[in-house]
Figure 1 (cartoon, one colour):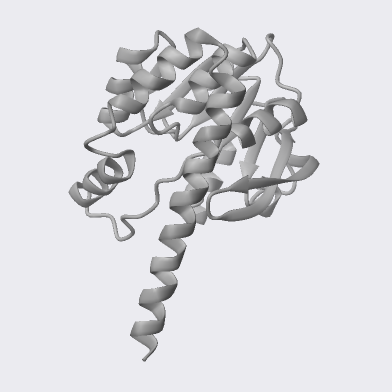
Figure 2 (figure 1 turned 90 degrees about the horizontal axis):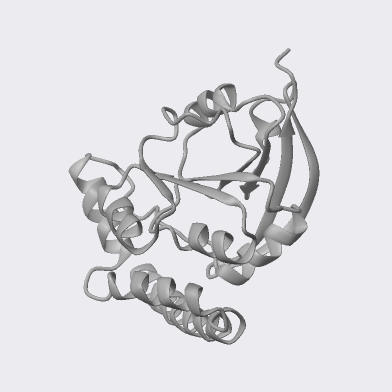
Amino acid sequence: MDKIKDFFQLAGLRVYVFFWDVAEYCRVVFRYYRNPRFAKDDLALLLRYLLYSPFQISKHFLQGRGAGDLYTYGETPLTTMDMIAKWSEISTDDVVYELGCGRGRTCIWLHHFIGCRVVGVDYVPDYIRNAREVSKLDFREEDMLDVDLSDATMIYLFENSLNDAFIQKLCKRLPEGVKIVTVSYPLTDYDKKNFSVLKVCEGRFNWGKTEVYLQKKSATR
């Protein structure tokens, strides 16, 4: 009985996510496709994943690495990224690093609509190759614990699958003075001495709503 209940709950969730994603794409077309350069890049990126979705690519890649959880891929809706960019006051003067950029769609949006310098970082080769072929932005095939962040003024981190030990290592690597946007958790949960939460808002994703945190790293103490 429980298995039947779980089946229908999962099926219902998939239907909800499907229609949410369709509605989100309609919002994206209406709001952002008026910019022909963005529309061109976004459509070119979408076409590359028609037969093999970014979720399938992530699952296949994680299987090859022997990962326990194969369903960790997620994306920030562009309408939510729009809200976050305005709320966190990202400007043309910023150098924004997206750690775990996936296929790079939000990086491309930031470039076209905010005008900041953007660096997308991901360790999945297919994501980076496709992003580089679509856009001339700086996409790097690296582990986020290895990438040079010394010139970053803002970091966006939407990775809910990272374990505590990984996040603690990442906290140590972040440069002093940098601002960081995280989704669902603040970095003060891992390092209260060196991080301060500047403000909190609510973000909408296809799986629901959650808190988004803007924080800053102070001088290491």
